[in-house]
Structures are given as C-alpha cells and as structure tokens.
Length: 166
Image (cartoon, rainbow, N blue to C red):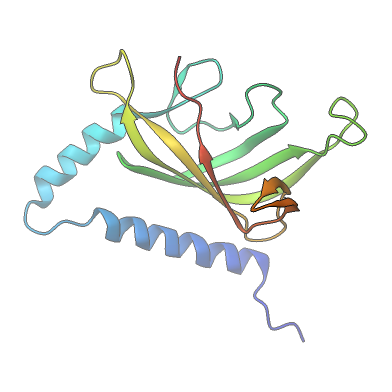
C-alpha cells in the first residue's frame, strides 16, 4: 500500500495552505475597510512584464526565457493577484535541448507559482510590477544547471528574477 497522498489531494492541500498563508499575510487589525480598498487599488496596478515589455495581469501563459522561449509557463490559473504577491498554478514546459534546442522536446512539470517583490514600473506612475518568481514543483522537477557547484540538480523550488522592463 502506498502511504503517499494522491496527486490531486496533494495539490489541493498545497493550494489550501498557500491560500491560508496569503490570507494571513494580508490580515490587518483595526482598519479592515481602508485596507481592503487599498488592496483593491493595488490589485489593479500590480502587473507582470512579459518579454516584449507588455504589462499583463493574470496571464494565461508566460515565457521565462526571453532569448529562446525554451522555458515557459502555460495553463496558468491565478488563485490570488494581490498588490504584493500573486499565487497560481500552471505547467512549466522546458525544452530538453537534446540533441540541441532545435531538435529538443518540451517536457511538462506541474507547478505552483508565486510572483512577488513588486517595484515601481519606470515611466508608469502608480503601477508596480513583480520582480521575482518562485515555482514549487509538487511532483516531477525540471533540471536546473550550475546550482550550488553541481552541474545539474532537481530542486523542489526555484526562485529567480523576472524580466526587467526596458
């Protein structure tokens, strides 16, 4: 008998935990109504910037490697898109680049996505953009290269910078 939970049950538990943590992180005592109004304004003005410099809110897909598009997030579904962070699920598709990137195959990895660390978007007063992304892999994991002195590793989480607007 396999004691590990099923994939849907494990994913549901992780999403429930993320939702709880998001609620705890945004809870304030005292001024609930003004805080909710401020969060609504921030929600409309926090974006993610894609490879072409376009501002997006709750995108359904997002390219992570702008130079070659060999790593992208697809089938994105956002659970929360707040002023300071966004939580969602999706599939990361990574090109194996074997024997080379033109002849490689894309491999899919289910992922939980967190966008965070918003900063002011240059030239757009009142608009902030997410500068960091963390991906959590609840099942199979993509290879990362040159991590902690090793050529290849398979971490459960990966955090990186997002495209800086030009």
